[in-house]
Image 1 (cartoon, each protein chain N blue to C red):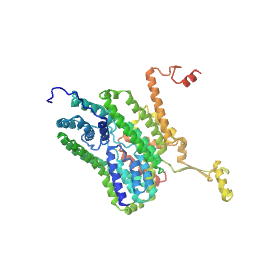
Image 2 (tube, rainbow over the protein chains, first blue to last red):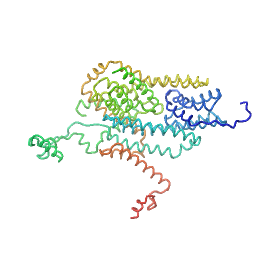
Image 3 (tube, rainbow over the protein chains, first blue to last red):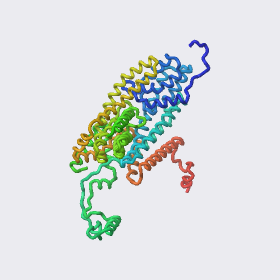
Image 4 (cartoon, rainbow over the protein chains, first blue to last red):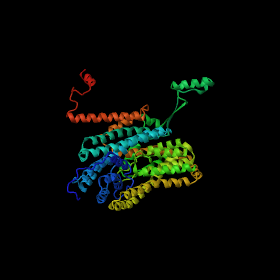
Length: 309
Length: 269
C-alpha cells in the first residue's frame, strides 16, 4: 500500500485459470456438511482464482474466509454463480469497491432461483430420461445401454459447467437480472413438458403388473382353433399349424380371458397409472418412499402367493 | 474371485461412494456401477441387466436441497456383489433387486453420518483459511471426499470377505414363491420413482403432455427414442405458440401471415 499511484497493470483471470476453477467445481459436494452444506467445495473451487488475484497473504486469508460462508444449490448451476463471482473478485482485486456483502449477496441471490432450474432440468428430466433409455437397453443385457447413458450425460454435464461459467464470467453482474427474465424460465418449462410426456410413456411401458385370475373360459367353435389331431405328421404338420395360426386360429380349444386381458381392452397400462397416482398421493401425505417401496414388495409377494399376480 | 477382481471391485466401490455425494460422473448410478462390477468380475451381462432393473427403480431418486434420497451407491454396489457371489447368473437378478432396497436405506444412514462428520472438518478448513493456507483447505476437502468413498468401499470389501458359498446358500434357501413375488414387486416398485418425479414437476400446464405420452406409449412400434423426439417436438411447438400468442396480443387473428407459406395457401384455399 506504499505506492502512491494506483498501478496501471490490471490482474485478470486467464482461460487456464477459469478451466482450473471449472474442473474443481466437479468436487463441489465433496465436503457437503449439515452446517454450511457446499461451503467447503465452493471455497475449494475458487481457490485457484483467489491465489492468482491476490498476492498478499492477508488478502488471501480474507478471501478464503468469505468463500467459506453457507452455500447450497444444484451442483451444476453453481457454475454460472462461480462465473459471476470470478468477475466480481477480479474487479475487486483491481481496486473496485466491492465489499464482502456484495459478493455474498450475489451468491445467495442466485443460488435459490438457479437451484429451482437445476433440480427439475437435471435430476427430474435429463437423468430419468437418459436413465430410462439406457436401462431399457440394459434390461436385455445390451452394453450400449450403460455406455450411452454415461457418455450422453457427461457431455451434457461438462458442457453445462464450462459454458455457463463462461457466460457468468462474461456477463458479470448483469446475469443476475437476466435470470429472472425469459430464457431460463422457458428452459425449465420446456424441460418439465418434455419430462411429463416421457414419464407418461415410461409408466405405460415399464411399470409391470399382470393380473393372473381367469375371468372366463369359452369353448370355441370348430375352425376357430387348430385341431392338432387332424394335422398331417412331420414337417407338413408344422407348416400347416403355423399357417393356421397366422390365419388367426387360436392354439387351444378353450379360450382363456384373464382379468389382465379385460383391463387391457380399456387401455393398456391403466393399473400401472393408478398405482403411480396412489404413490403420488402417499408421497404427498409424507409417507416415506422407502415405506412405499417395501409395501409394494409385500403386496407383490402376497399377491403372488394367493394367485392374483 | 481372483485377488485382482476383488481389488478392482473395491476401487469401483470407492468411486461409487465419492460420486454418491458429488453426483457428477454418475459412477454411483446402477447402470454404471453394476456394469463396472460385472465387468471386473467377469459377469458383465448379469451386471448390465441388474443395472438396468435398478436404474428403472432409482430414476426419481435425487438429493434436493438438504434432503437426502435413498442411496443408490450402496444399493448398486452391494447388490451387484451379492449377485456375482450368489452364482445364480441371470436368474439371480430379481432377488438382487429386492435386496437393493434395504441396502439403499443403510447407505442413506451412512451418508448422513459422513455428512455430519464433515461438519467437523469444515471447522478445520475455517482455521486453515484464517492462516491463509489453501493447501490445507484442499486437504480437508479431499479427506471428506475420501470418507464418502470409504462409506461404500468398506461395506463392499466386507461383502467380498464373506465366502461365496454362504451367500449362495442364503440365496438358495429362499423359496420360489418369495423369489417370484419379489420379481413381481420389482416390476411395480418402479412406479414410486415416477411418482416422485411427477410430484416435483406437475402443474396444470404440463398434465396434457403426460396424457399424450401415456397414450402414445401404447403404440408398441415406437421406441423410446421416437417417443422422446415427439416430446421435444411437442414442447417446442407449445413454447413457440405460447410466445407468439403473447407477442402479437391476439392469437388466431384470422388469415394473417403466419410465416408458413404452405399454411397460408391452405388457409386461403
